[in-house]
Image (tube, rainbow, N blue to C red; front, top):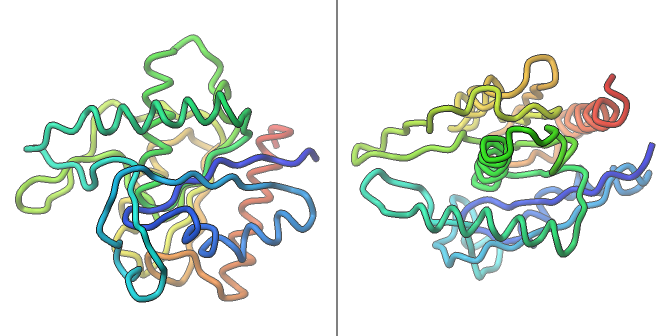
Length: 225
């Protein structure tokens, strides 16, 4: 099986080196047998450190667009600039076989795939990527003054490539992750639950389950199995 190249997007208020460290238990094993390689993309919007980041990981801290998006904000340009950045990276450093996002990065990845599908309805679903991994994710949304999240409309079925959804059973975003899982394409979407919170777990059992899900995803993306 050929090596898969993944474009990787970090969470809000972190940076690419933090995601590299967080993902290490998974990426190390997939790189060891040449199943995958990982390219980490830094955000460009200065941010306060994300939850549980300050004092553990060094800054500076970034996001890809103004986060979280609120109804009262005029922030469409910020999101469009993030999408344009991804197109530029694909043009300059691609092609890539897959996209991987953690939290805010997963929201960006899904939104990018969805808007591309809407703007280019006659392109093959795999025209940008053959597969996607969403970790502790939230569908594209806006937040009102009461901190209530409302998802963007028109997202169901827009992402038709094989997807893997990794979610923590103790994560505050668990139900959001399950919702994003439900927005993806039928039997091509797989869900792996781990025992931890809003993080990439390092325990042996959780890591083994995630790795198994990743390998299954690569098999399906390659052979349609």
